Image 1 (cartoon, rainbow, N blue to C red):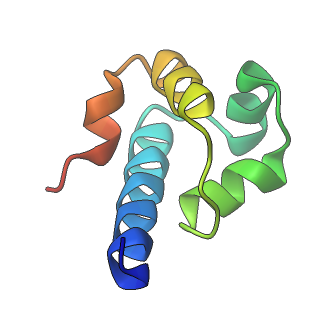
Image 2: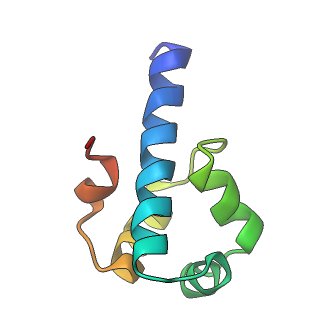
Length: 75
């Protein structure tokens, strides 16, 4: 997969996590606690700087009460 395609996917995922999380008034610390990670990990996900695993994507979706696919939808 080309690097810029990968970056776009990570950025899209991160921005969707951020938008949904803030809309629901869930803090990064709270989300991190719920998925058993730290706030820095959530921040890096939301910035599109790291490629989190499938299990973490699933856990994030569960906490945000959305389908995993919703985290990849473009608006």
